[in-house]
Every structure is written in structure tokens, then in C-alpha cells.
Image 1 (cartoon, rainbow over the protein chains, first blue to last red):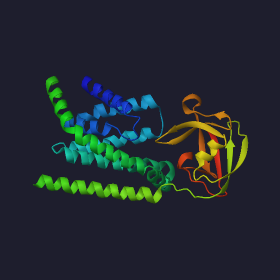
Image 2: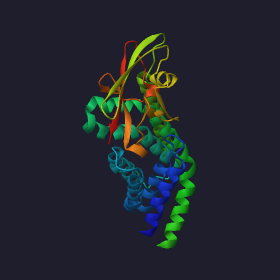
Image 3: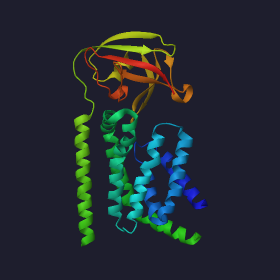
Length: 158
Length: 132
């Protein structure tokens, strides 16, 4: 549990460190890595990260997005965890980045109606494209070395 | 071989999806109208009082008009454009006042910030002191 606490906090710190780059974030990569290495136990570090985001940035609408958006990626990654190819993982991460706005729009439908949700989503498409590109490149480059490292570390503490 | 085929199919699917999103972006991005425009800006203060300003401008988006005429000051970011701190001399900064300047086009809340809100001749834009 201590390890999951540290990893959740590390995810938050890494995101803050990269916050100057719009929609370029390491969280998607970390969620995938946690899912691949820990399986369903990845829920612990992921939701610790979500809790830290809410504590740090306060109660706002995006809190609702965060309650389910990362879960979508986590479920997909757990189901595909036998996948070896870093390219396929990069593609999954890229797709998630592309769909991030659309996933958030689900909540917006209940907030302001369908028109509001569609309008807000289309206005944010530029950032979804950045998110897709950033996720793809980061996962392509870092997935394999970080997975190897995390698996080695996890084996040592088990 | 099978793995290589999966990678190619997945990559093509991602590229196609991204291309669709690029199309959506260009179809729906805010676009300004060139040429001279007369607009009205109403500032609704914390105490409910209103002040109205009339501008003639050739700008295409709202933020430069507000800044050039000294009506607003704020912070610029690449991601969100102008974040208005002061409007007509009154501050509304979330971190300090738990308040913000809501932007309206007529009576409808704007979906975009002042930096990406295209202005039209005859348009009425409101900056409303908002809390919570």
C-alpha cells in the first residue's frame, strides 16, 4: 500500500512538473503502467492521484470528469495487459488523449444539455489533438523502459 | 506478422480518428469577421451596478478591444488566452476573491474566453461579476 501511495503522489508531482505544457501529461502513461504491472490494484495509485488533484485544486466540475475518465483508460489497459508492443500501447494512449474531451462531455450533457456538451467538446478539440500527440510520443518512448523498471521494483518488494 | 498487421491497422485507425478531429477543429474553431464593427460592452459589478461602453473596432476578437481601451487587465496563457482579473477597475480573481468575470454574448454565457470570442457588428457583450 505504501508503494501505491508513493506512486499516486509521484503521478501528481509529475503532472505538476509538466503543467506548463498544455495537455501534455504523463498521467496516461502512468495509468497504463500501473494497470500492466499491478492489474486491478492500479486503482489504488490512480485514485490517490485523483484525490490529490481534488485536494490541491479544489472542488470544481472537472472533479466529476476525473472520477471516471482515468478509470476508462485503466480498464482498457488491464484488459489488454498481455499486449507487448510499445507501439500498440502508444496508440491506445493516443486514442485516450483524443477522446478525453468527448469523455468529459458525458458529464456536460447532464450539466447543460446536449448542445452545451457538443459546443464545449468542439471548442476543446485542439487540446485533444495535443493530448493525443503527447500521449503517443511519451508512451512510445517511455513505456518499455518504465515497465521493465516497475516490474523489477515490484518483484523486489513482493 | 499478425502483430505487425495489428499495429498497422491500429495506427491507421488513430491517424484517421485524428484527421477527423482536425476536420472538426477547422469546422468549428472561432473565426473573426474582418472590417469595422460597433460593439457594446456591459460590465455588471459586484454590487449589481452596470456600466456600458461602446467601441468601434476592426479587431476580430473581443480581448484585444477590451485591453486596448483599458477596460480589462489580466493574465495571458497559451492554453486559455486572457484570464480577466480587473474589469472597469474591479477585481475578480478566483484565488483571491472566489469570484470571476463571466463572459456573456447578449444574455448567453460564452463558451469561449475573450481571446477566442469573435465579435460582430452590433454585438453586445457582458462581463458579469460572478461568485462561486
